[in-house]
Length: 257
Image 1 (tube, helix red, strand yellow):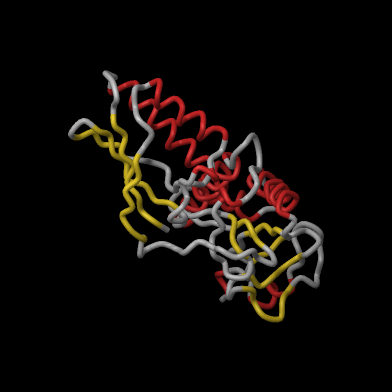
Image 2 (cartoon, helix red, strand yellow; image 1 turned 135 degrees about the horizontal axis):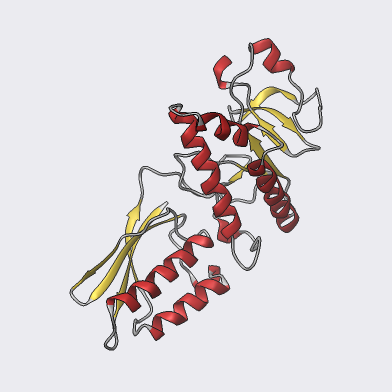
């Protein structure tokens, strides 16, 4: 991932309120298209210009060719707020984050966790994140629904990792059950991505608990009952199960590894 600073200069008299609304609108449009990462963006005002420091999947993430219709609309609204188009200042590569995938995968998957800021669409050959703007728009011109699903998955993951309240069990149900709303929405998104990209796309179904290692290895696919989905060797050292009919990958319970 890469760090860039955007600078917004005023070309006429404006107000902090108008500038704030226009800048935040642009940053949210970038986020909904996967061009910038994270949930909150600090915007500072100093010496007559506004500055925002952002994390991007690639050095070229803000190139015009990747813009969604909503990004283009937000850029035009900067003019109404008396702001010039933003100038980019490249800061450098973030040494604490993952490198984005640049090659077309043979398969891909929907996978995230509460510690990940990157795209939840992963290259199945390397597990590297695939920038969302590199994919055809999933719904309504951008990838807002994927971002929303990722935010919900991460919220459930954080609750179950904290293991401090009764909400842990409800969160685990969402993460591990093929009957949960979170699974249903994510699995539908997976299908949409596969349809648009023509690349086999799988959903990662999280697994904890279970009685013992033997029973874990014997468990069938929770969606279709397929008993032959255990792999001889785990994919990417993480996924011990794969059901090609259901497009699901999963792990042996972390409690027994």
